[in-house]
Amino acid sequence: MAFIATNTLVCCVPIYLLAIPRAIVPIPRVRVAIAAAMTRVIDAWVGGNRMMFKALALTRIDVSTQFAEPPSRDRWYVVISNHQGWADILVLQDTFLDRIPPLKFFVKRQLIWIPLLGLAMWLLGFPYVRRYSRDAIARDPSLRRHDQQATQRASASFKHRPTSVLNFIEGTRFTEEKHLAQQSKYRNLLTPKTGGFGYVVATLSERIDRVIDVTIHYPDGAPTFWEFISGQCRRVHVEIGTRPAPKLKLAAEDALTPASRDELHAWVDDMWCGKDRRIDELRNGR
Image (cartoon, rainbow, N blue to C red; front, side, top):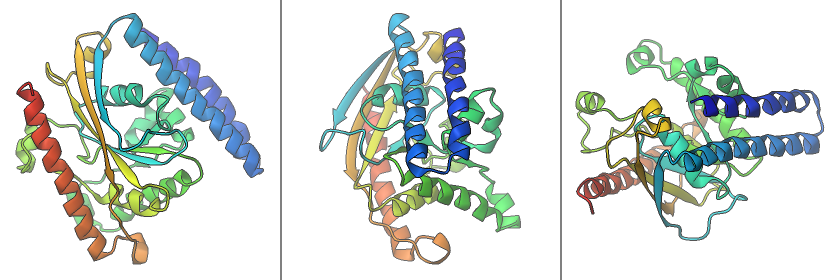
C-alpha cells in the first residue's frame, strides 16, 4: 500500500504541473503535446505498479488473448469487462500497458475527493458522473441529462487522441446480494446498463471498428483491494477477445434511434450470455 501511495504522489505532481500550461496556452499543437506528456505519466504510474507486482510476487496474471489483429497505441478502443472490485482496474491496466492507449473510464463523482488521485483523474479527462438512482430520475427526469451531458463532453474529447474507454457496463461491482436483488437472468453477471456504452460507441463510430471484450476470473474468489495489493490474491485469469462494434446512430437530443437501441440490447445480450457461459467453464476448471 505504501508503494502505491508513493507512486501515486510522484506521478500526480507532474500531472498537476502539466495541467497549468495546458489550461492557459491556446495553441492546439502545444496542448496536444502536453496531453501526450500526461499520457506518458499514466504509463509511468501503471509501470511502477507492475514493477511492484513482480518484485513482491503479489499475484500472477495469466492472460489469454484472441485479437483479430495486433492491438495498437495509435487506435481507439472501447474495452468491456465484467466487474468484481477495484482490483479489476489494476489488473486491466497491467494487462494492457504498452498495448493500447491508457484506459479511461467513467468515475462516480464522489471519488473526485480521493486525495491526489481524484483531481488527477479529472485533469486527465476521466469523465465524472453522478449515477442517479432510478427513483431519483423518476421524480425528476431532467437528472438523466446530467450524466448524458458528461458522457457527451467526454466522448467529444476522446476524438482528439487515440483513447481506450473502459466500460464496466454492469454499473457496479458484482456481489451475490446485488445479483439477487436484480434478479439478473445471468448466473455470474449483473444486468448490463447500455446507455453510456451506446453513446460512446455512437459518438466515436468513425474511429472504433472493434470492441475489446475482457473476462476476469479470480480462481480463489474476487479479492478486496487490500487483499489484492497485500498478496492474498495469488492468481488472476484474464481472457481477451474482440468483436465488431455495433453500428449505432444518434437521433434528436443526442439519444440513440429506436433501431440502434434494439441493436445495442441484442449485441450486449449476446456478449453477456457468452461471458456468462465462459465464467461457468472457468469456475469448473475448463
